[in-house]
Image 1: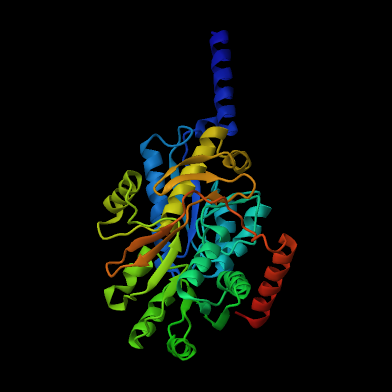
Image 2: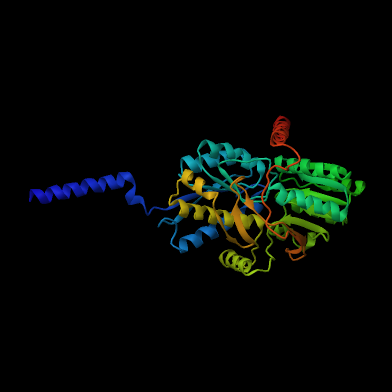
Length: 409
């Protein structure tokens, strides 16, 4: 009898230790943070990226989850405000206990979140094309680096339309830094920057800028406006009958769809690595799955695909590491590659950006793009354009950020 009681006591102690050690929680969900603007001027662009993450998570859960556990999404609303993004990132990591973050659109918001994830030794997957000039041991950049979008896109525009350009953008770090790079390229071919104008995110009065475009008669307009302001810019172009070619770096299928055919611009081009119109079995399956889950009228885009790929890359790294701990995943993520809707996506171990193709599309009235140019191979990411040193680029970005802070933009 005593022996039986002793055995029962030992079993009870082991059960308590198992609970304390977390072994009974081995089937608890793995919490992942999704941090995007659900309100404010960036919401129209960012809300579809939440759906992209949700689709990837649901597919993983349908396949049995990770490490025998389901994934659970915890949302944060950055409200299109860098300070809110930083606060929400801290809440998701420290209070909600998420194991990874997927999020941000604007570079201003990414730069606000960057020190938070670095201090916590955490991990952020950033899905947007951006100005580059940055590298972090705690960020995986699944969007395009400058040599995968801005540089070849601007070169194509100069070659195709001419070297007299007008630069228009939203007033924050990405458009201004991107236009530093583009301005260098224009100067290198003895071209002319006929004008360079910025308005805040959410701005709607583009009439004066479009009047200036008409007056200065550029060969091409290079557009780095973000969010719902694009609708107002193209409305102003339409109302004044402007047909000057426009090459955009932040207008994808959702933004084009929101403008509608009434704002269609006949010479509107955009530069990405992915378009919904790509004719491949992998992309057709992706588009079909996205529409079946979220509605037949919904469209996909490069940032949507990059968000979807980010979750799958992270899941592959978790599987390889046999752990969801950020430090463990961070070590294995640089060895990941997988097939995606637009082709193979592979993390470059040296830069923590991904290898990507270049594609240029011309807008159609139905909200899609016709492919007019594409790279023959994947482009290795280079976040720092090679014609200046990293120290020079960092000094220029620091000065630009300081200028933005001092001006209150």
